Length: 131
Image (cartoon, rainbow, N blue to C red; front, side, top):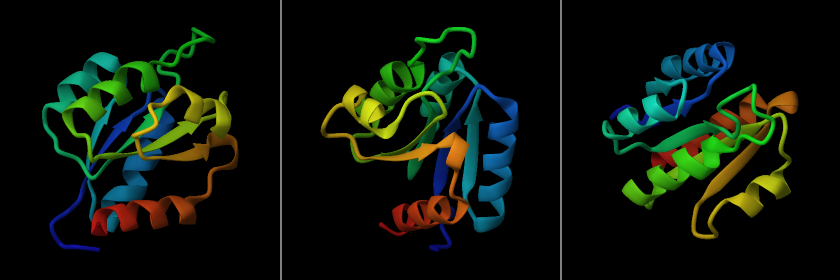
C-alpha cells in the first residue's frame, strides 16, 4: 500500500459498524473520516478527495424505504469526485437492487452486511488505494 495514507469516507448510521470499519482500516494505513448521517456526510465530503467512500444504503433505521446512502450521499459524492469508487453495504438490499439505484457511470463494490467478507473488503480497498 502506498505510504501517502489513502483517505476513506465511512457513512454509516450504526455506531458499531462505523467503529468496526474504522478499527479495521486505520492499522492498514488508511486515513478515515466518519459520518453518521447525510448532514455529516455533506460536511465530510468537503474534506475530500477520497480514495473511496464506504456507504450504508439506509441511513435511518426507522424508515424501511430509506436509501439516503445512495440517493443523497453517493450522488453528491460522485458529483464532487467523479473518479471516486464506492463500497456499498446493506443488510436490506441485495446487489441487484443496489446496482439498479446507482447511476451506470458510478463504480461500486457491493457487500452484504449479513455475510461480510473481511479479506475481500481489504483486497478491494487496497487495490483502490494503489490505483
